[in-house]
Image (cartoon, rainbow, N blue to C red; front, side, top):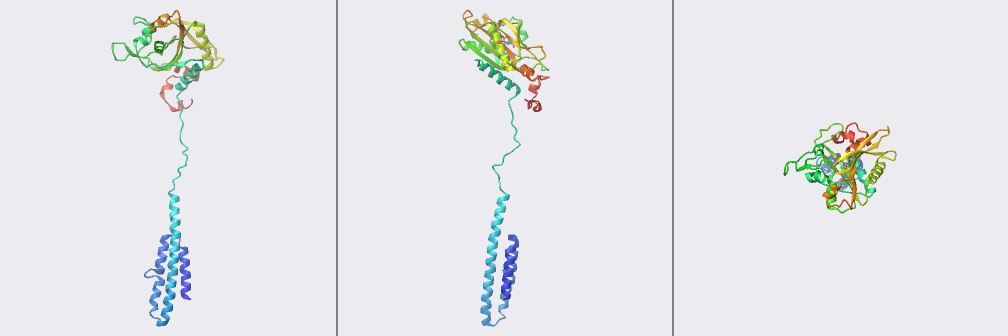
Length: 330
Ligand code: DAH
C-alpha cells in the first residue's frame, strides 16, 4: 500500500518535470544509487524469507513502473527541446528586405534618350563616332583648314599622339557627319549624340566635358525650309506645342547658309539652342558626295544645356557634381 502511493507520487513528479535536467535529478532521487526506491531494497533483508519474495516482486514492479515513466517523460521532453531549437534557429528564406533602393538614369541620359526617341520617331537613325579624333574629322573635312580662324574658337584639347595638333578630343559631334557620309550612301537621316571636350573651365554655364547631339540629312532637293521645319517639329515634340522656334543668320564653315536656332520661353524671350545650316558643298565633296545631285542640312546643340533649360537649373555643374540629393529629384 505504501509502495503504491510512493509509485503514484513518483509518477506525478516525473510527469511534472519541466525539462530534461530536472527529470534527471528526479530520476536520481527515485531509482539512483541512493534513490528512494533503491533504498527500499535494503529493507528486504529484514523480512522473513517467504515475505521477502513477494515484497521483492512488488518492489521490482514498482521500480519498473517508475523507470518506464521516466523514459516516456524523457522522450516527450527531448522532442519538445528539439522542436524549440529548430524554431529558434529557423531561417525564413522568403523574407523580403524592404530597404533596397532603386536608382534611375542620370538627367543627361534621360534627355539624350528622349531626344533619340523624338528623332527616331521622325525617321532618323542613331549614329556614333569616337571621342578621340584626327584633325581631318574634327576640322578639315568640315571645311575648317589649318589657317581658318574658326579653328581657334573650338578651344581644342589636343592628345599627345602623332604630329602636333593632329590628334584631339573631339570639340563637337560634327565629325560624325563626315564619318557617316564616308561610310553610307545618301539618302542619310541620322542623329549622333555623344560627349565632346573643350579647354573651358567649369562654371555655371560651361563644362569642359559636355554632350552634344548632331543631326544630318542628305537627300535630293533638300533646302533651308526642310531644316526649319525639322527643327520646329523636333522642338514641339520635345518641349511642347506652345514653344516656337526661329533661325538667326550666323556663320559656320561647314554650312552655307548658316543659322543659330532659338526657342521661345514662357516669358516671351528667346533662348539660343544650337547651330544649323545647309551642308556646304565642299563638305559633301570631301566625303565623295556629288553636291549637284545631293543636298542636305545639319544641326548641332548641347544636351547638357538643354537639360539646364528644361529643368531650370541654376548651375550646369550640378549635372556632374553627382550629389544624390540633387539627382534623385529627377
Ligand atoms: N558643331 C557646332 C559647334 O559645336 C554646332 C553646329 C553648327 C553643328 C552648325 C552643325 C551645324 O551641324 O550645321 O559649335
